[in-house]
Image (cartoon, rainbow, N blue to C red):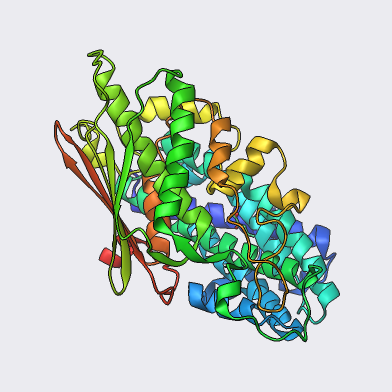
Length: 475
Ligand code: COI
């Protein structure tokens, strides 16, 4: 549907008025009259709205990106002062980052923002913005504990964001150019990952601070005794992650295709000792998704022909360079069908749209990370119940804590996903995760033969999170 310029602008203005009004309502309820001086009555008896909203002030602020190294540095010598400094960073950063996304949503065409899924997400974000921007400076550990409760609650409330967005973009197909929809989705999702990273890292540091093995005056432990700093796994081993993901995906696939299904073997070679600092759940998401695609492609290619011989293996090569670790996953699943190839990275387009819509409708909540998925499957949203995936203790240098065992793979939770459910957002989502820490994900399809997927990860942890999208960088 085409929109004239003038009518699109009218739509945006009308939407912004609506938003400002809803902001006004929130404020009136929560801060009775405290900001009334800045509210102007609307013309001709229309409800009042504030022409220059609080949101504008927050949109003026720039996000301050961080790197894995900074996250680690902060948590490694955790003192009360550092914990409070982390809290105040998160306190200003969350509303800033949300404000930018709210503004993006306000500039979407009216027909798009009135889609019930998109407007649901908008309302969630506005509520979170309103709640988080009002948090006063955090000066004490008690203040911080109260703040952490707010963060946990918000993280839990936002578990519905991904499925809502995924359904929303499918429903608005045709109302926006697919490239614009994808750019909007990519920016929104990347920003969501970023907010959850900083929020979860702070929760993890707070948990360490309160843990029984935290001694503020303890001497520093050397690096060998520390596996995790907050959510950052300092020695993430590419080969171990591949093996763990492979085992879990094989189980899931057997569940979907039956115990006798000829599941291909996964052959691992190359630099098997390569390790790097990373957020484990991000890597598991990407590798799990790539392996699932490969295994499924191999099985499905052979199924109609009833081939009896063992399926061709999936070959995983790990290559470590000075700056990067590269994981190549090669399958012989026949390659990507020609009609799907142009839409491989798209959230909004592609021949499987109807199937995706139906699949999404079966999933009331869809997780962005595997921990979220685990929380959903077990029915205990992690940040609602306060349970901690890594068992509560994150290796700050203060604790006389035994070297931590690798956590059980959060991929185990995938078995709770209905079998055979292809949601269709795994690949674009995986690329967003890869690019978020300045890595990349490419796929090369060899028609009629198979696919080579290349995942490149910067291994030094010194790259800032990437908050801009590929599309906007290209522009
Ligand atoms: C999200 O999950 O979408 C968030 O923005 C969470 C954050 C506000 C804590």
